[in-house]
Length: 106
Image 1 (cartoon, rainbow, N blue to C red):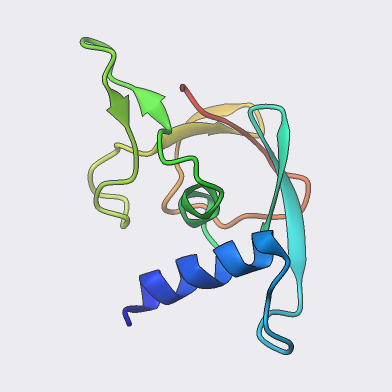
Image 2: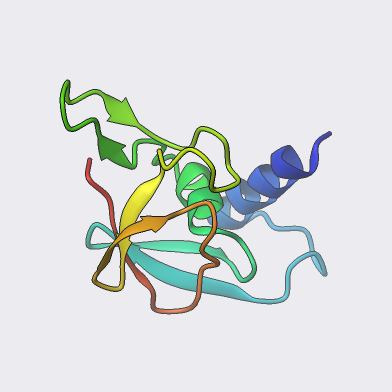
């Protein structure tokens, strides 16, 4: 199992409340488009959003087609979101922190 798949599985387990004991010690809450999302400390914003079943992060300016995480390493700029009022942040590069506010362009 790849590391990304394992992290996503663990995030989904946390959100369902079925997290194995001693795997993750710190869960945190972030606000995404006005709704609270529980995730784990150390995850990227992109991983937290994917685990919360929110794969669409913005819309293409021309065609309005949905965009989400593509490369996952900051190269493609497909995962741009607004974080704590700062637009144009790459979700795959920013680590979540408790109380963070994320706005997508869904």
